[in-house]
Image (cartoon, rainbow, N blue to C red; front, side, top):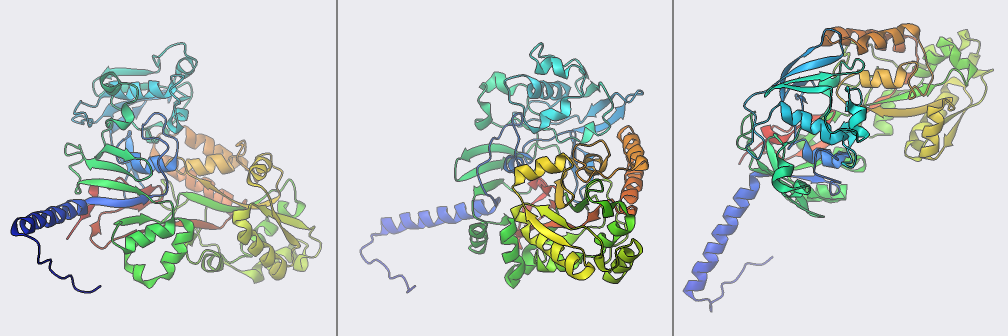
Length: 525
C-alpha cells in the first residue's frame, strides 16, 4: 500500500475530531488486549448448569461454574467449593465442609442450600437435567424427585450454612469428584426461568456477560472470586467453525489462543513458525486393541495375545499415521488422570519375540491360525489397515480389514460379537476407576473384549468401596498390572491435544480434560 496523502480540505475542528477517534481506537485496542480471545467451533448448546450436556458448553461454563473439586495443572483433584469431606462410617454417604466466604456473581453468599438446590433442579422432571444428573441416582430419595413425587431430595441435608450431608443407597466413593456445576439458588426468583442468558449464577473466576449467536460468547472477570481476581479482563470465545480459519486468525493476531481440531493439529505440527507457541497434553482417552477370546480360539493363549501386542510399532503408528499427534500408551489409564501409574514398563516392538511366541503356541509363521477380521469404523480405517498389514506381513497371521457403520459396530461390540478391534474410551471424571471399571471389569456392559479375571474384578470391587485415595490408587495399579501382564488387551496410543498460545499469553493450562479455567491467565505487553 502507498503512503496516505493528507486531505488538504479538512478543517482543524475535524482534524481534532479524528485525533479523538484515533485515541479512542487505541484505548479500545488496549482494552481488547486484556480479554483473552480463543476459539470454539460452534455455538454452545446451552449456558446453564442444569441442562449442560455437551463439550463446547463445558469449555465456556467451566470458567463460570464450580463443583466440590477442581483440577490442578497436573490433572490432580484439588478442593474447590468443598474444603474437605468425611465419609460416613457405613460408607453410605459424605459430610461436606463447604468453603466459607465464597460469593456468587450476584454477590449472594454460596452455601449448603445452593448445593441442595442444584441437585434438586437436576432431578426435577421437566428441567431436562443434563450430564450431571446421572451422578445423583445413588442418593436416597432421588427416584422420588425424578418421578415428580416431591421436590425435596431426602438424602441431602443442610446441616448449617457451610455443612452438607449426603446419603446414598449404596457406596459411591467417587461422589466428591464428580463434575457438578453449583448454581445460585436465588437467581430464578430474581430473574425468572429464562435467567441463563440474562445473568450469571456461578462462583467461578468469570461471569457470563453476553452470547451473540454465531459470533461469540463473552465472559467478564469476577473481581470477588474466592481464588483471587483474574489476571485478565475477560474471555471472548469466538465461534470459528473451521480449524484452518482459527489458525489463520491466530496468525493475523485475531486470536490469542487456539484449541486445534485433529486435521489442524497436523498443519500446526508441520509448520516451524508455531514451534514455540505449541502447548500439548495427552487426552483422557485410552485406545486399545480388543481381542475377544470367546470368538477366536488362538486368543485364549496368552502367548498369542502377547505376540499381537509386541507385533506392532507404536512409534511408527504415531509418526506415520498420526504425524506425531499422539503418545504411546503402555497401560489402560492415561497420563494426568488420578491413579495413573507412570512406572509401567514400555511395551516394545519385538517382531522376533512375537514370531517365537507364535511358534511356541503352535502357530509357526502364523500357520494354522484361522482367518480373522480386524474391525472398526471409517475414521479408524488407516489404523486397521496398518494392523492387518503388520500382522499379515510380519507375523503371518491371516488378518483382513473390515470397515463398518459406527452405530452397528458399537452395538455389536457391546454384545461381545466383535473378535478383533481397535477402539477408545474417554474418561467422564478424573479418576482411573472410570477406565478400569467400565472397560475391563468382568460384568461391565462396556467390557467389549470380554476379558475376565477374578483377581482383577475383586480389586475393582474393593476399590469402589475404598475412600482413602492413596489406597485406592494402589488397587488401581495392581489391577492394571494384572490386565497388562495377562495381555488382556493391547494398549496402543493416546491422542494428543494441541493448542497455540501467543508468547504474551501466560498461565494457560491444557490438561487431559481440556483447558483449565482461565483465572490464572495473564496477557503481557
